[in-house]
Length: 454
Image 1 (cartoon, rainbow, N blue to C red):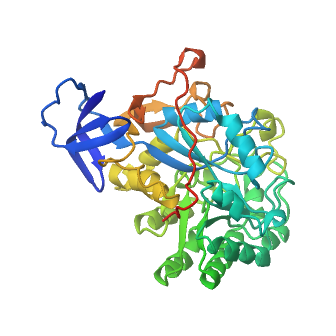
Image 2: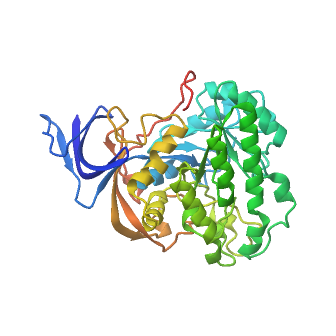
Image 3: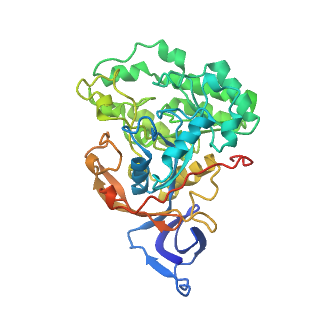
């Protein structure tokens, strides 16, 4: 079957153009002028004038929590939410599931759990903890896209952090096969020296995780990468004060990239009411001025990617009754909402959909070496999204596809509506009644052992 999609606007590389995109056998066969003749026997889809054709987005920071904590989220619900949000590829984090993905046996359990449940394509990160140092190559050869570590307590006893020496040891090991270390960059000793968060005041929680904890950890990662030559990536950066050292490291040739998240780009601490634990995440949402600094870091390329850090839990774990920030689980669910959140804020600052696709599509796919995703180009996987940038909607939590209706975006008006998505050229249908949807068609992604990410 050949399908031609005609779009008056499509994001193709760094251009917003009119074109006709031909799909064949799950791939993009050609990108031609809008009025290109329809091939004999081909189906034709003509997008509305208010719609823009985007590549399917690639979210490289998603906690699916399955198996073991499926009541928090699971492969079925998470990937349906992704599809509804224009995300056609997700890379699952190695913790919050039981077991954590820190060895090949755990990876096999994850894959066995995911088979037949994924609406979009799913790949996997591995983890590095003190107990598996020296044994990471086996996970790499089994196809994980890199290795996540913490430099402070993860919130889970089964996933302990690395100290500085262990992090450098991990970098040396990973550099031997040109892998990638991704780092939750908050410095443990700095956090341990603070007054622990407790009670309903967000300001107290914010003081318990100061910006210096991030900047010290980022400096450690830069120093380690400079020493070992390892490729490294800073996860969910919330501290704009760390940007100058990141920019300097990049200019010096250190192999480092960084991401931030929709919540850091849209929310700010001054508006968070006491007891509003659905805003709790680590590192925390900081002040409005800091938020604008992150936008400047995106604009100048110091920050490479925007990812959801979708980290859900059950409503009970958010401690809504007490509103205690010390007791509540830290994490924000936004897998389905990432594109409209980022677009709503980006357009206010003069950014375009070309920028948004770069941050959430081509740069994320490049991070993990998925060269055939995140862009509309001949030869790429036919993963696509139809987006209406000038349409709008109000977030009603019970209409999201996340397993639990917990979000700081409740009743917020957002610009941009995802109207359709395709996975490998097949339309994705996601409704509020999952039993009425077609069988999931997503696959499980494996990085070939001989392939290094770029």
